[in-house]
Image 1 (cartoon, rainbow, N blue to C red):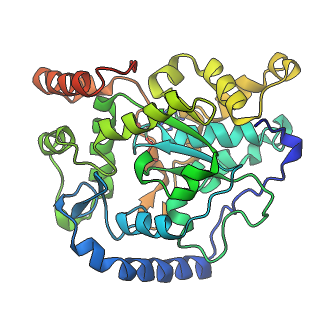
Image 2 (tube, rainbow, N blue to C red; image 1 turned 180 degrees about the vertical axis):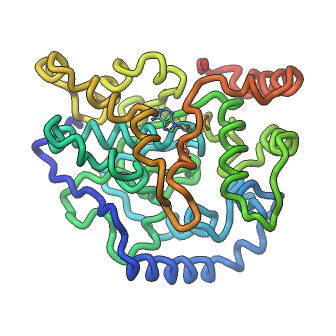
Length: 344
Ligand SMILES: Nc1ncnc2c1ncn2[C@@H]1O[C@H](COP(=O)(O)OS(=O)(=O)O)[C@@H](OP(=O)(O)O)[C@H]1O
């Protein structure tokens, strides 16, 4: 299925949330948590990273009582209706979600924000997470993000492939999966969790996060099963699922943005390429530009904007993992990915 930009009306999510909406959202969240509390109580649990516990549901570990949580997943599985034209950006947390959201938002909306209005480009005045929502948070909204039934809907999700709401699996919509070296995911998650973790729970040590990660216990982990689920379907249904890696995106950014645009049905014309449209998008979404735009303010009441921007580099794990830790993760990855061609 190929689309042209002209054939779709975009509704860009509203960037500032008024306080009435936020209050309503919190009330809706409380109702969802209440509805699934009995099921939650039956699930095995382990010590959490950001929240006190993680719960094992359908083979993956999830937080509870948060916007992205096991109760939200259950509610989505019960009620979420996908459209065949939806686009989902799937990632394990800390794999480059924010960057991918920015790139996809910038490329599909490129005709709305040309050079002359760059200073007001949504990505340079707001957090990419405001521009492209997670389906996990849609469940709490009274008014859906995309109100126009004909608009193309762009969503992100951390849900493992095998737990996606059935309507997404049945809809034939497109999914982009971004995967990152497990050692950099671990390090990024370690820093993120310690920033966001409730102070009453005390800080996490790197050793304990390493042990949990190796056992597969991290939000929406095991890491390896999450990656394998999407990788398998990208081989079976390449027209529906595009599999990318953060590391390759870093080295070959332009060719990957071009590939993304084609896969999503928004290919760059020769003229656009010649006039530098791809480079413009890459520039807007660079770590430097996005982190500068998100130096201040909060994404949510409990999440500062700058928590999503730390180093933005490949290989920061060398500053955190001992040789022994590195070999252990290499061994697990080799064993779990032995039949896959994924390189970082
Ligand atoms: N524009 C851009 N380019 C490259 N890298 C970027 C960019 N924006 C964010 N980052 C880095 O991505 C890491 C955060 O991961 P996620 O965005 O997946 O986090 S989240 O799941 O949405 O919470 C986190 O990685 P670490 O720096 O290694 O912690 C961010 O710094």
